[in-house]
Amino acid sequence: MAYSQKTPREKIRIITRSSFFLLFILAPFLDIFRLDLTLGHFIIFGQPWTLGLESFQHGQGDASSAAITLLTRAFLPVMTFIIIIAIIIWKMGRIYCGWLCPHFSVVEIFNDMMLKYLGRVTLWEKASKKTRGALPWLLVFFSCALMAFVWAFSLLSYLLPPKELIPDLLQGDLGAGATRFLLVASTIFTLDFFFARHLFCKYGCAVGLFQSLIWMGNSKAMVVSFDKSRASLCQSCDRECDRACPMRLHTRSIKRAKFTCTQCGQCLNTCDEVQKDNPDGRIINWVTKEKAQAVDRNAPAFELSRIKKTS
Image (cartoon, rainbow, N blue to C red):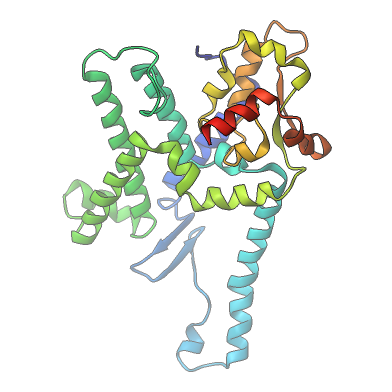
């Protein structure tokens, strides 16, 4: 069963993730951020950014001034950024994944596409309908391949002058190194998008793992909570909240079983739709603080037993 109605929260999330995806693609071309290997330094908002150690490298200045420059131009800005991001993750979990991450945007795009044409979200699940002929499979595969090439070319534009890449690509004059990069990266991303999208998010993404570890350390962080007192209402629902989860998690389960939750809110949107005629609203909600601490303690028995069977 699929639900197409978009809640205000989901509409906002579509805007944020779409905007960030466009930023990911266009940032090098607009000189917002990139590492130019031909120049040997970063470009940030159109300006060259280096560690400021050029004079020291040429024998001018002393070690103490070089250390201060390194501290102020690299260490402090990076640490400040990490601390701010860590505080947000500590309170809200993998909010970057669900609301901004370009890869997770691709995960959801191809989840919807595979469900539409192949009757399943991933190749590892049983199809809800039979696929007639090879055309749907080819459509999905070549869409994955095309997106993979866009990703590979975008990553290459972060390393080489982007305004020169497009003419070189059209003229077939990228060079051996850039060509190998495109071929290898496109192949890897094609396999990722077609076979293992959410699996990469779960087990292969260092950024996602970093967020999950910080989030799990805060028992009062935002988490999806299940109202156990209304569990009887779930009997008329075929686990639609679980089916809606892009990460294929058990939505109503304990926090430990939702280690890779991206806070995308898809489960909430689905429960809103299922319970649209219920004056009390949905059965699952985001909670924080003391209510969040109760998520592990108050997990329903049927969810705990299912986790033990599938773990």
